[in-house]
Length: 339
Image (cartoon, rainbow, N blue to C red):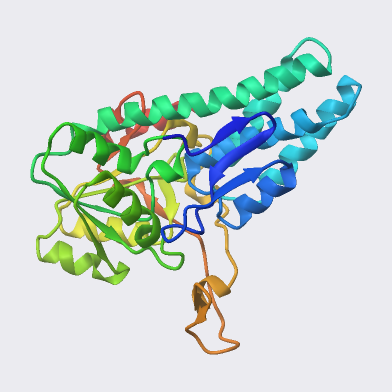
């Protein structure tokens, strides 16, 4: 099902902070509302952020009262700046804004023509993501064998995309093909996207899933209870994969135990003009660590370090699955040459 939709000047999407206990729908009508939803993770997931960013510019276009081309484009640029400020690491956010703004600048015509083209481009981003995720699932399913038990980190499922999912899209495709597989989802502290979202999605699909705490991953690998790892990505640079904090630890553990570590992401997540050293890692508020939901679990005044993402060098990655193909380590140099 579609996780984000455009309906006559309103963006419809689930509030992911309420899951799995409540299914609440957001009706986002302004750029500021979209910015707040992105900042607070009501809207999250790299591919979904790309679509949300495009729709944010479309909201500015739809509700603008500007009469001149120059003022109209200035309002769209301002909206894009607001959205880009919300999260510095996930490249799809910037990509979505830039793609729609680029379209707006190239349209020949007045305000009404630009408005229509901007909305159409935002909807095109969403449609493309839905198709790309199914292609990722198909390309990645060849790596999944009957009887596999797959560990996944964070949430790279339908909720993180416009439709179907990336890492979970690969798992879903393998399941739909009749492969007898099981999934182990780690909880993904501090915001528990694995426990709240991945477990919710997999149970809804009827795919066998077992939930573990983050610090169990090494032990279950040592015990031979998992034989594949697959995760999503928030940014793929020339020499590394940037993803939810904890991904690096899982990758190192998988490498140590000889377990393939796969990354599934659309090419919109590729940022091949940059290296790991260029990436700004978002740091989030201390309360995400000192509290679980509204329950305080740490002493008052404790110092907290809360990076939202970490960086996994490509040497730990067995393959990158995208909509066009599967890139293996022998292909990684080709990624660098694309710059």
